[in-house]
Length: 561
Image 1 (tube, rainbow, N blue to C red):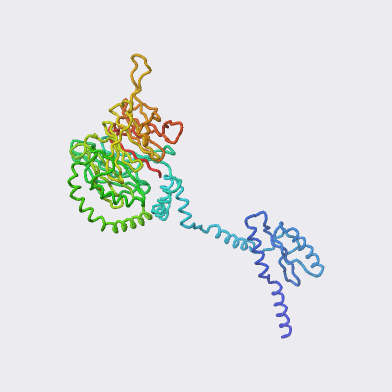
Image 2: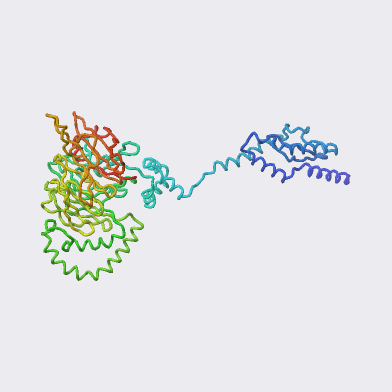
């Protein structure tokens, strides 16, 4: 009995060993199925043929119809095995018959599909550098929407490094910002922004500008500086000039971040000051340090007595000796300041100056004082006044290191920023202009232009009225001669039309009231275009909701964002 039981156990162990499937063969089978999982047609859902000897089984080497030759070899081997006594463990030798019983096939595929699904659903994380390179190429409107995706993208697109990359790249487009509009008698807090490339207007809410009017704006890098202005004391928010307060504060608006901040205030309160911007490099820092000393000393270099400042002559004589004594001791400190400024300029935005001249004071008196703002020191400093016989300044612009100003009496002068004195410029006589329309100076590609309204004589017909036309003039800086280069296609209807230059473009904004409705026209002129033609960008999309007083209070700035 004991021998029979031992013999039975031995045969049972042998049968179990024969019936067990090789782990290595199962692993190879799963790898083949995984490689072919992307193509359902290329994978056979049938079990490979299993053969056994004395109740055992084998796993075939093929799993699909793509391996036809291998299947043939398996079938040929199976036939030989039948001869030797091998029998199919799962029925007949037919590859179309499933041999996975009791849900084995479902469990096998479920496990394989779960692994594939985990791989497909695994999130892909891009490095910050690649995300930054993708976001920097977006238009401004798409960039604003991308900042709403997550906090990480918002922080990534507001860093100084990202701003610098966008400023230096070729992914910017011109944007025109319209400030100082009046709606329903109140100073509007809305800033109207035009995407010039897509001809689409946008609105930006601004509580900071509520109740402020008659201010001037200027664009620097990616920011807009709002200088001066006034507000009503009795009716806050309304454009009421019966009792006003004139401001000397300066606000900075960043369209990319929609953020506001303040900088140092001017020395004098002004409304509608005439502004100019001069961007400098680190190579000019020593010259700027000398400029402060020369502002206190007598001007040199071919300047007429008319443009000398007699009121400060005695002050300069008193300070001349003290400046000369401290000149030697100031050299090391100047070099140290230059090194620090060069290091800071590598990290931050380049240094610039804002020059403010003229405007209206607190008692509605015209101002002839001038002051300059230094971004590195965040201070305003008074400079030499405009000569008394020059007239009231109506327009100004910086071109080639010179601050050009034009007066209502058709005089032209320039302030040398590096040397610190005024120079009178005598040019050829222009044709008679319409005195109600003040000329506008514009700088594009280091070229000086002026837009003015002149009379065009008739064709000789009796009784025909003269026609006014807006012309564009360019000043030859070598010969000091004005030359007409283009004519505006529209009749000059706006007395306070605004023209600004940005790179090689001149953009003009005209707003006027006719037949009880306020209309607006936006035109563009490319100075590098050989055709010299103006292009209409937008018509009657903003002003129909505004008051007629917006024609006098509007200010325009152009940025490439």
